[in-house]
Image 1 (cartoon, helix red, strand yellow):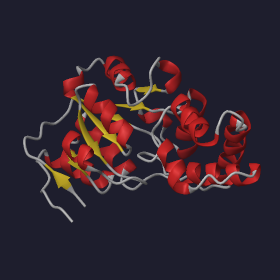
Image 2 (tube, rainbow, N blue to C red):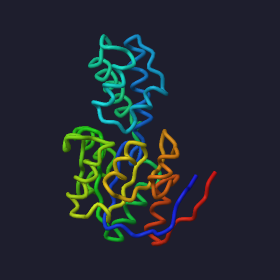
Image 3 (cartoon, rainbow, N blue to C red):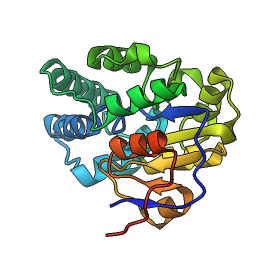
Length: 233
């Protein structure tokens, strides 16, 4: 599905989410959360784990506590999840999402600045982007460690725009998650949603400039300097 509107303006800067947008990590994280629950003797189904997509860790902790109660081994759950997630990464299962290199090449050809605004920690962001080979292609990387409030607060995107010395209204944000779209929209940025595990709902269709199947579509939009066609399925 590709949904777009008119009045396209080429941005001065582009700000990327990381997990589920640049790297195919959300599916690995969901598998790790499910396995962690099973290991500890709790039923943490995939549909519940998906509620944590794009959310800061404090929100994830609240979700788990509200569902399983104060006696739930919260620290062990996330530590065990990190263990399983790291094992999947070490097994070589972390991959770039479709169109990433094409879009990065296109932005560099056009002289458009690039940054990352992620809900992941500094340690994970630097490690994963370095591992996948694109760490040095961004002028700034803003993580959850760099802001007081994570997504859906606009703080990560506003901090990234500041680092790029670009007014928010001149930035294009790229997001896969609902909280990410909310954060970018609240920051006053035009946002394109590239869905990963969660599809767009009515709120996303309202807040997003465009819903794109993958980043190759965004690269074509930047390259041709023209609005994408509007199609719905």
